[in-house]
Image (cartoon, rainbow, N blue to C red; front, side, top):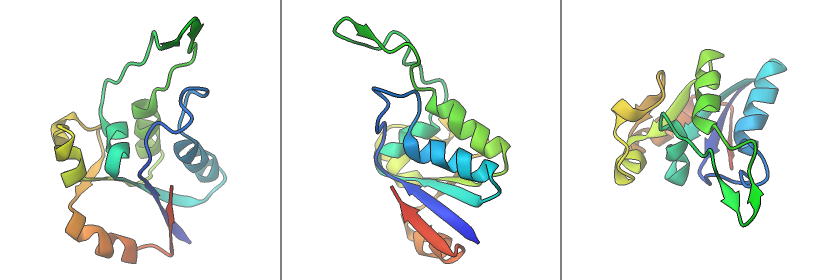
Length: 126
């Protein structure tokens, strides 16, 4: 069964954790043999931006000692063979051109979403 994970909400739980739960579960389930791909849309297109650095993140006197490195997690998904897609218009609206995406990311336009969904048995939205 092929599943497409649509991630739209960005930086969920990254204050307490070092990664996004939807990205983490994709890694975990892929490691167990599931065939999962990812579509980043809305604010989550930021996950595809290379070179993010949240080192030094603090909340008052509390320092985040394991800051998120989500662009690296996305890169590892690509390295594992997952297809990772970014909605081009969402990326461009946020000033992120495709040449700044993690290597191996596929850009798709909003009009291509129905065809993309049609290629999967299930679509999960986060």
